[in-house]
Every structure is written in structure tokens, then in C-alpha cells.
Image (cartoon, rainbow, N blue to C red; front, top):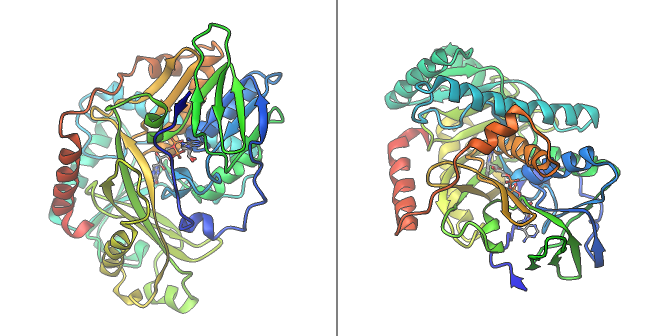
Length: 442
Ligand SMILES: Cc1cc2nc3c(=O)[nH]c(=O)nc-3n(C[C@H](O)[C@H](O)[C@H](O)COP(=O)(O)OP(=O)(O)OC[C@H]3O[C@@H](n4cnc5c(N)ncnc54)[C@H](O)[C@@H]3O)c2cc1C
């Protein structure tokens, strides 16, 4: 029996989750359960894999187990940009490799379309809306990067519109930005509401267990044997296991030295009064991604509550410590917020939180069989809503022996390479350098 050596320990600070109605009591794994497919992890990947397995084999018993409440995980802590493009606008070769870029966009869009279909079919109230995303610059370096991004979009025949500083002020209610580019095809969403909604609208052959951390595993090597996982109060056995456990997958004994565990941080203001909202003006709802990838993302959310969210900083943490650096992150967020809306410097944050991201050095994903009948989907490169979803869905199709062009494309992707010696130090230095270069866009 192997002990799972890295476990997610989130606090109760995720603004998106905390502003929703309290959840009904969780079903917890107790006693011994058996099923045909066991999915561990209720983020975007695990929710998609679970739903698709159940759809493809309605006679199968599918169990989804999560260590926390679904909505308090990284998926529910994200900034809710459901993005079709590569997240990093400086991604090398974005425009050079036109076909590869267009395939990657089509792959993300397939994930978003499937998500939208599930949201509509199940009437999930999560403010899913196709408002697109703004990439906005506040420095001359940022403006240059926007120009390059526009050239990349031209090369792959993607639409966008450009905004000058006056148009930015009109939309954002802030004179901070000098230029912006609006790309219309992405969606915005209340991420915690979305993942909660996806979890409670699973097909009838799915059972979801939460607050059931998998602490030990016994993987079987027998061709027909069952794998067994242990939680505090029970066990689950299944012939097929899917690990949709983000960077925590390393704790299950896989991908050692291949994942780069990062935390990124968000803060959400308390609800603005009408008078505070009028002070800044601007559109009631939008999402901004900074022109520099180390800059600050912003969400203005009106429905159902009038709030502003900022997200920035990537910190390296092998132990996924979401607590001890929270005050430091909140202080940075305060500075970023005040730069954009000095008129609202008296509006406090109600919540600040960190969440897990896992990258690989070469940017390639984990997708497929990790050992006999144990499958994994990890590394979604900052666009987890789209890529986590499509990756989870396609993984279910792979397990079920389906075939499609998208699945072939996913299988043809490279795999993460090994981290370099002193990778941790390198990541920390890189994160620090990027913050310095992002300058005022942080
Ligand atoms: C602050 C922040 C902002 C972000 N903004 C965006 C954004 O705007 N758009 C976007 O696309 N992406 C965004 N991301 C990235 C996105 O959240 C992740 O890429 C995504 O959540 C990864 O999905 P996942 O399903 O792989 O993992 P997760 O969402 O982390 O889900 C993994 C699940 O596994 C469970 N788990 C792990 N170990 C165990 C265990 N031993 N036992 C039981 N359960 C276990 C966890 O509890 C968790 O629920 C953001 C991330 C953060 C932190």
C-alpha cells in the first residue's frame, strides 16, 4: 500500500465559493464501495472525465471522489476566463506554426462547446457568457506585446478589435490602461458555481463523494485486478482509475520531477455599493488579461453581486502551501487594485486565496495511461477550463476505445520532460524576474 504523499489542503477563503449559498452536506466515502470507473479529483478534468465515462457507458457505475468540496478546489478558485486561445500571448511559434495554433484553438473550443452544452442542458446557473476577453496594456512594453499579439492573431485568422485609452476608460472605468485588444470568442463564468453545478447534475450512473481525501492507494498489477483507494472512513475499488488530481498526482507516485507546482493568487472586493460603482463607471461585466503574462488579470462581476477580482503572482510551492503567503499576496493585490481604481481605495477585499496550477517545463500535457488501467490528465497551462475539460472528455473516450481526430491530436502531443537540476530555484528566479519586467502591469 502506498501513502499519497502530497494532499491538497485548501482553506475557506475562495471568494467565488464563499459568496454562493452554503452547499448541502457532502456524501462521504464510508465502508467499502466498488464501481466500474473511479475518478479521483473534481476539477475541470475530473468532472469532464466522469460525465463522459457515464455518458458512453450508461450501464457502468462511475464514482467521483474529491478530498474537498467541489468548488473550493483550484477549478472553483480560478478567475473564470474560459479561454480559447493559448493563455500566454508571447507563446513562441504561436503565429509561426499556423496549423498547430489553429488546431490548439479548435481543441480548446471543442472543450468550451461541450461545457456550454452541459451548462445549458442542465440549466446550471453560473453566469456563463460569451463576452470575450480584453488584453490590456499599461506600459510601452505591454503595448508592444499587444501589437505582436495582434500580428499573431492576424496570422491565424482570428478576429479582434483594438481599443485606445479613451475606449479603455469607457469600458474599464479606469484610466490605468493605454491600449487594449478585445478577442470575442472566450467566455466568462463564475467558476465555483459552474463546477458545483456540473457535480450535482451528473448522469444517474454517477455517485459523487466529497470531503473524502484519498490517502493511500493499492494499485493492482493483475490484468483483471481491481485497484483500491483508501480514505479516512472507507475504501473504493475499481478496475479502472482516473487521476484528475492536478499537481497532486505526483503524490500518487507518478510524474516525479516532471511537474512544476505553482500557486497563483486571487482577491475579491466586497460588494460595491451603487455609489462606489458610479464613482468609476465602466461596463458592468468584463475580464482583462494583462498584456504582460506576469501582469494582473481582472474580473468585474455584476450579476449577482457587484465586485472586482484581481489575480496575479505565481509562487512556487512544493508543499502546496495555500495559507502562509496569503497576506503577502493580498498586499500585492491591494497595490494592483489601487493602481487601477484609486477612487475605490476604501473598498476592502472580502477574500484572498491561492490555488494550484501545475506546469511542465516543455509545456506538454500528461494524458493517457500512467500504469495498467490507471489514467491521468494533468498540466493545462493556465487555460484549465478549456483544456482540462477537453482533456478529461477525451481521456474518457480513450478509455472507452473511441476514436476521433481530436483524440488522435491529443495522443500525438508530446509529454512533459524532466525538470532540470535546481529547477525550483530556476522557477523562483524566473517568477521574480517576470514580475520586475511586468512592472506597472502587476
Ligand atoms: C487563482 C487562479 C486563477 C486561475 N484562473 C484561470 C482562468 O481564468 N481560466 C482558466 O482556464 N484557468 C485558470 N486557472 C487554472 C485552473 O484553475 C487549473 O488549470 C484547473 O483548475 C486545473 O484543473 P484540474 O481538474 O486539473 O485540477 P483541479 O481543479 O485542481 O482539481 C483537482 C482536484 O483533485 C482533488 N484531489 C487532489 N488530490 C486528491 C486526493 N488525494 N484525494 C481526493 N481528491 C484529490 C482536489 O481536491 C481537486 O478538487 C486559475 C488557477 C488559479 C489558482
